[in-house]
Image 1 (cartoon, one colour):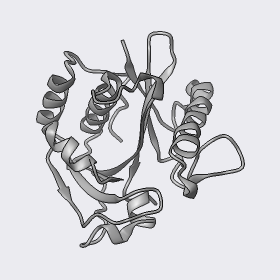
Image 2 (cartoon, rainbow, N blue to C red):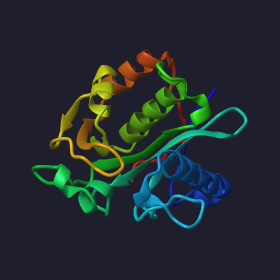
Image 3 (cartoon, helix red, strand yellow):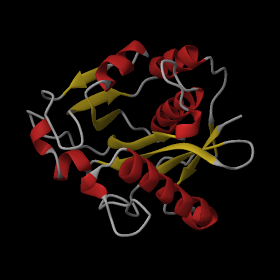
Image 4 (cartoon, one colour):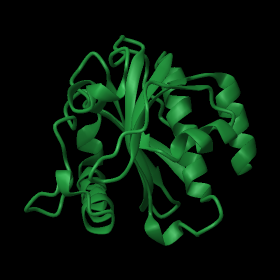
Length: 207
């Protein structure tokens, strides 16, 4: 079964090898496959200004310990994508609070994706995102995402607000969202992906 491992500054040494692999997978997906020119670097890892000691990484590992998906959370009181790069996406200004975190770098191993049907690993990562957020006392999650995400998340039963209009960007049309973290959202996402138990192991304690 695929489970979510949570990597923070405190336990990063335990996950040193997996973290390096995680950043290489991000390079393969975002730079080589999606051709995001804004994050291209002369080395085969993808890291940005928000991969700091404040970042929380979610790694989806299969039974063999292979990374098959992942994501990242960053506190909005620290530098983050919406607040520092795309503030124009939020008409009333980027939301910032101790209980609001930003969600970025969601990915699934391309080999496990199938056109026209949802990936079971995607369900694990999405459930893991909400489980971790709820455990940490995160009330809302902001995200800069492709324009198809609002419809997809609402179909999962998530309560979201669009912070502005869709904006054209060189890497695709994007929009900013604010997502409520609730037990109901976890429940509806588990049902949608037929997940019958928590997917996160070793949940971090609230700060």
